[in-house]
Image 1: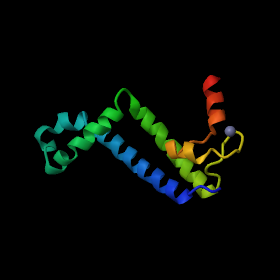
Image 2: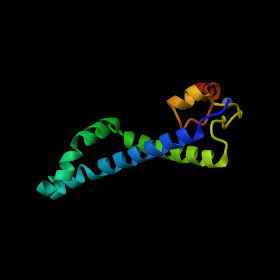
Image 3: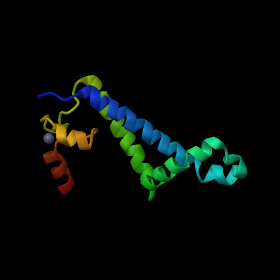
Image 4: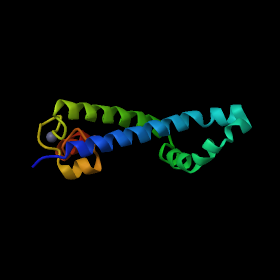
Length: 120
Ligand SMILES: [Zn+2]
């Protein structure tokens, strides 16, 4: 049994780009739209509108901090791929499981240790 590490790497990189774009978008909205006014109404800006709304919803309620957290987790997961330890639980070393990794590709704990941590 082996994990398709390359597929996970691709997913992680894509998720990373998406999050970074979302954070940029969030950081620019608010200040930018108010300060530059009609300058912000360019074709590029218009195209980004629907995407911005989606990201804004996702990053609502202080989730920008969560995005930063997930970005750090993604970086750590990419590092584990390079180290060859990706997919192994950080606590007990057991395989995290492909199903769990499919849901959370940057998971660092097996489901048992994750639950133990949440109970603590
Ligand atoms: Zn474990």
